[in-house]
Length: 176
Image (cartoon, rainbow, N blue to C red; front, top):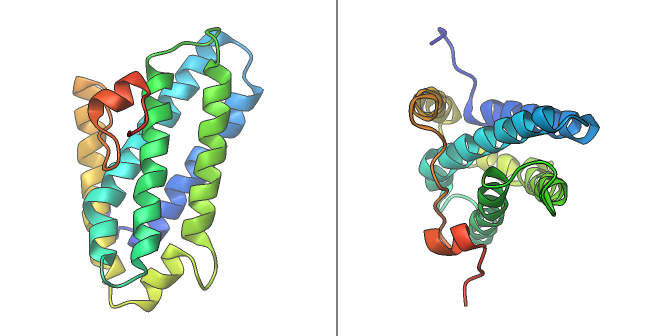
């Protein structure tokens, strides 16, 4: 690892910009193999991002920012995980494949907006709270590298969720 990791918010914002760029590339891709490769890369980046947020960033913010904001972030993640699971089990040319990637893009744009809103977003609240963003950034960067290596060796796992069971995610069923 380099001598200095970005702070937690800089790391997450860099992830946001990378995924936005990948979605833009997907929108302009016409070849099915290119669409499939981009969709896989988008899903991989998002799974890693949600894991580091849910394992490290969000728990560090618990009790320090608005609870509703964290609850909504978990639900937004679960909605994304449902689409990620469907996209990863599908392929370009199948019914609704491109629509699912488009809707995922829209959901992620909303989630990013909620996190990055100046003064009232999650990141602004985190900066104002007593949270060591440098330490979190190092922890998140280390976890991110470990996840990349794990996924390269073993493939992308089925996403797990707080508001959906793994079976509901696989089947695309909402919580009753």
